[in-house]
Image (cartoon, rainbow, N blue to C red; front, side):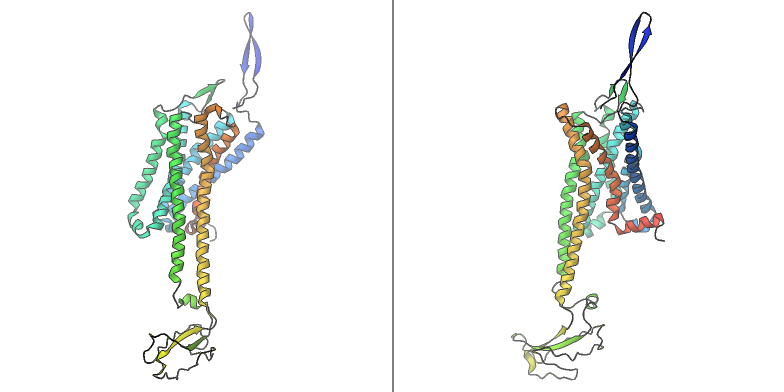
Length: 413
């Protein structure tokens, strides 16, 4: 931390002059313009965190469509992020702009413990949500029966308990001593190597590994599901009513000779499906396809036509076109799932990985690594931004949440 140059004033003390060294306040070195910019930016972050996560909680409480068990996990995540926005970020920006801690040693210790608790709970809730989505996709029926409200609350309780276990050791002495420089008390993140490795592994690296692994599996499962859904429709020679509506409005029937040895039965089977959109009222079309013999409702098939088969041919609907459209929809769903998962993992890693990586390097390497102070501050604050992004990422792709937000905010009534 850089400080302004100190000034010396000389005071008379009986028979000699003694210098009195005074230091400017604040000792952070920020000018007024810097303080204003920092305050505006961080103020917007706080507003985003509090507004977005409060809206999630209110929506789940008030909107009936969000009463599902899975939404409890999002409320737990929102509560953790609210702690970050209300209890952590305001004190962090005050400590940053002043360059010292003015709230006492006890509050300094509690602030650091709650900081680790809230950020860890936020990350572990993200991990819990990823596991919930994975089992919902891979074992939908079995997991839906297993995931009762009671078990959901138990899993949420386990997340907060683990977060508490990771965050409280400094209360029992596992921490480095706080420093006082030029009479100013500094409240800094812990630099005790043992606790840093312990907390970073439990708070980030292990949950991050689980999330990356699980989301890769989710992406694969979603891709497989899309292909399976596509394959179920292929090979069905008859379109569904909705598909038939997209076909042509006239139907022609043709008598086609077959050479198959298995069709040696007397007579032939006529398969007639009436098209609701058929302008001919379901009657046979007078079209005569090349190479086929036309017949009418009064036509009689002789017993000698055992080697013949009657089949329907739509004149303006190619089933391959239906299959192509179905494949296009499946591919669009696959791309959408890939984009959503990419945004989730990309934002999480972009916000938290730089801080935890530099935190470990700075602790293990010390001054030898010479990490720039501005770089560490930058990644430190980017981590907090994840608490503002979570309510956007985990709800903007959810139609029920979008409707709930509009209802709570009174939009579109």
